[in-house]
Length: 386
Ligand SMILES: Cc1ncc(COP(=O)(O)O)c(C=O)c1O
Picture 1 (cartoon, rainbow, N blue to C red):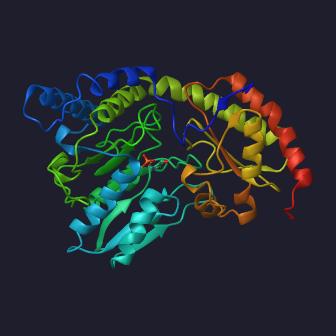
Picture 2: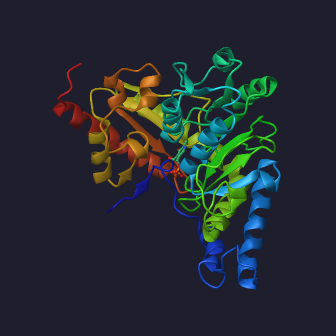
Picture 3: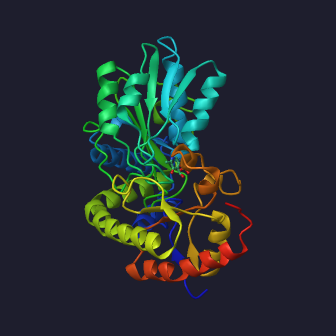
């Protein structure tokens, strides 16, 4: 293929070679089981504990408050199911938002089947959760609030410090899904008033299938899986040692380059949004123009199907997404775009470009060059009647 322009970093990122290098010995010579008491095991154990300390330092937390898990979905499930089930004697009401990832929404639906009540806070037109609405939804029997840090589809950054402060005042545990935030936003759990935070490796140039859950000391939580004693029994099973080492190295690198890379991507993002809206008629930006992840461009191109556009872009060597990667394969419009108050018609034409470390202005200019023609062609054959 002539061009290969990857603009789907919100789905996943390639592993940084420094991360790969840090992981390698733990596949081969340092292969021990961290639970074994002989030296080979202890080498792996020490590496995990050093990693835990490093992650804790970045989050401004204690090492004891970090649980390594198998990715963002597992972390969200543990936080939501674990805290709800541990606190049900105090109440059975949970608050979340309509634009959460399915890794949060589906455990909430499971809890509803178990007799819990869930309030789904709507978002404003710009995709932001109003902290006042969260505050107004709080009740004496509210036992958990879960609002994501940054949205994976439209990139909106939520006012989680404000929400966290209210939760703290009311003594309600506050969970945030920060899978899209690492490398872009500060992660200090005290400054953000967070009790539980989900992060994963695959969006920050780390390995897939590994992540962490931060759990503030004293937060009641029950396991959702049963087996060995690992990770304080909250994540039983032999630890994914290379994964944990890679996850930690990726987080370290993401934090080091956060400010500089965010500034670079913000400029590229704003350029791309402005030019798409100018060069392609009948397009709308989804999400907030400012309170937005530095790498997220999400637009609805009216009168066409996002999937058709994706395929045509792919033929030109451009990888993008028509929503969350987890929902591709289904033709239902994105629940996030619908939550912004947009019609099915507008939601169907949504497309997300998510920029990353390798993205250059030249890449963006290439997309801007080919996109208007593809849209014209698709509109000419579009079966959608306005
Ligand atoms: C906001 C958010 N939460 C959770 C997840 C799920 O993470 P994982 O794929 O590591 O299970 C993702 C990944 O797409 C995400 O973007």
